[in-house]
Length: 84
Picture (spheres, rainbow, N blue to C red):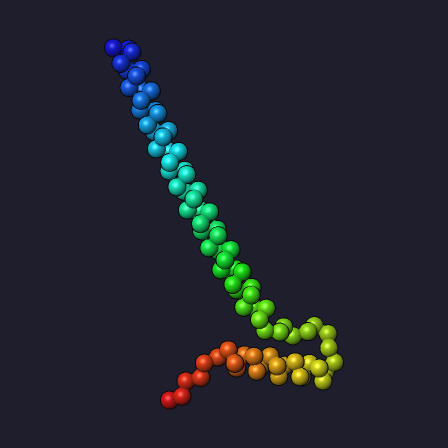
């Protein structure tokens, strides 16, 4: 009787360990896939953000005015206009 209880206990613990291992592997692969997707999204956003010029921090008033016009033109080009 004691031997049967021991065998059943070992079989039960082994089954639980086996199920936990596969669950952990699945969770790890899903986590890795999610991290890759988030990294891809961040790379896309950073690429689209660097697509347009950023205003310089130090410039003369004339250069600043010209740069602001370029910034407005880039903004207008990225917007869709709806004519009603």
